[in-house]
Image (cartoon, rainbow, N blue to C red; front, top):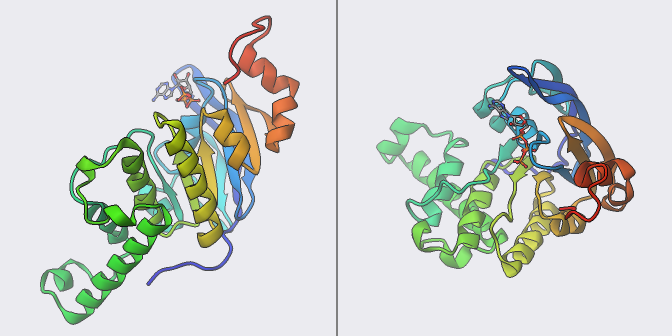
Length: 266
Ligand SMILES: Nc1ncnc2c1ncn2[C@@H]1O[C@H](COP(=O)(O)OP(=O)(O)OP(=O)(O)O)[C@@H](O)[C@H]1O
C-alpha cells in the first residue's frame, strides 16, 4: 500500500508568469512551501490565486517560470502526472453528489491501484486483497477528516460541511505529499469552519504533508498558516508569517486600496 512516511520535498515556484490575451494574471510569482508547513495564498478578488493553483495542479501552463517538487519538475506536466508525483488538490465548488462516501474515496484510490482493470473484473485474489487494503486506507482517511460515521452513507444526504470534507478526503486518498486546498471553508458556518481547521491540523500532523491554501477567511488563514504569500494584480507583494503580513503596508494597500480607508480588509 502506498503510504508515504518521509517528509515531503520543498515545493518551489520560481518566476511564474501567466497571460490571458492582454492580461497578466501572474507576473513572475515566486514562493517556497517549506516541507510540512501550511502556506496560504491570499489577495483580493482577481489577484491570481486560482490561476496560481491551476498552474500548480497542471490545469494552466505558464508562459514562463518553473514549479518544482524537490528534484521533480512539475511545470507543464499533465494534471494526472502532477497528482502521481504527489500534488493533489481540492476544488472550491463541490462536484461530488453521487455514490457513498466510500465510493468517492475509492475513486481517489483508483489512481494508486496496481492490480489493473482485468484482474479486478475477474476478482482475482491479488486484486481482492488490494481492494481490501484500499478500502481500509479509505476508511482510515475518513476517520482522519471526521467522516467515519458516514463512510457508507450516500454523499447526497450529507450536510454541506461534510460534503466539503468528502472532497478533502478524496484528495487525501491520492496519498499526496502536498495538498492544495481551494477555499476549504467557503460557505461553511462557524462550527464547520472550526472543524475544518482542526482537520487541517490533524492531517498535517498525522500524514506529515505540506498544505497550500487559498482562502478568503482571514480568521482561518491567521490561525492555521505558517507562511503567507500575498498576491495583488498578479504580483507577489508580500511574504511572511501571518503576523508579519498583517502589519505589512503593501498588504494593507492591496486590500484597502489607496484612499479607501474604512473598507473591509477581508
Ligand atoms: N481563463 C481565463 N481567461 C481570461 N482571463 C482569466 C482567466 N482566468 C482568470 N482570468 C483573469 O486573471 C485574473 C486572475 O484571476 P484569478 O481567478 O486567478 O484570481 P483570484 O485571486 O483567484 O480571484 P478570486 O478571489 O475572485 O477567486 C483575473 O483578472 C481574471 O479575470
